[in-house]
Structures are given as C-alpha cells and as structure tokens.
Image (cartoon, rainbow, N blue to C red):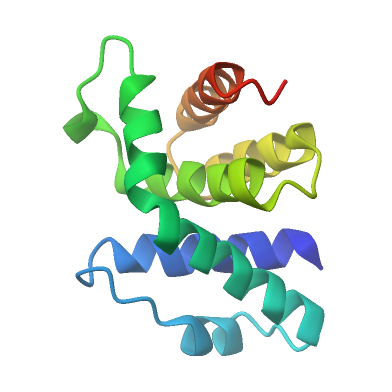
Length: 133
C-alpha cells in the first residue's frame, strides 16, 4: 500500500535528521508491518532518492520560505516535504497532486494543526518553480 510506504519513508527520513543522517530502513519497515516486496522496494527507492538529493531538496524548501528562516521549520514538516519532493522531483511516476495530498494528510496526522497548510504551500511553490505543474 503506497500510503503506508510513504509514511514509512517519512519516518525513516525523520529519524535520520536526529541520527547524523543514519537511515535505519529495515527496522522501521518491520515495525510498520510492510510485507509486500513492492511496498518495501518503494520505501527504499524514496529514501534513497531523498538521501541522494537531500541538499537539493532542502535548498528548494529553504528558498521557498517566505517570512520564515530555515531553522523555524519543524523537522517533522521538513521530513514530510522531503519524502514528497523526492517522489515528485525524482521518482516522477506518481501524479504530483496525489503526492501532495498524501503529504498534507501526513502533516495532519503527525504534525501541528497548522502544518498541513504550510506543507501544502511550500510543496506547491517548489513544484511550480520546478515546472512540474
């Protein structure tokens, strides 16, 4: 299930922000109960795309901040946007609207009550700048 796979990738990326960029895929995949090989592969693809492009992704997020400094962005929101942008910008097999919707739902579930609109806005600014739309 792609939704759970995206959430699992988000959790791995979020954890890596506190673990000196150590990505512990297998443990979190097991904890989340992913068993389908295609879902596990999708998680690993997203995490690797993020890992390989994290400087670019973070720069795009930081460039899109209006009225905020990068240190004001919650790590949880940065991880949500990171996995979404890895999929939108580098995986390119899922419609961007689907990915943004999933990111917004993750923000509602895991972050603050206002984060979903922040995540939505930043993702839209980035993808407009990247000519994805």
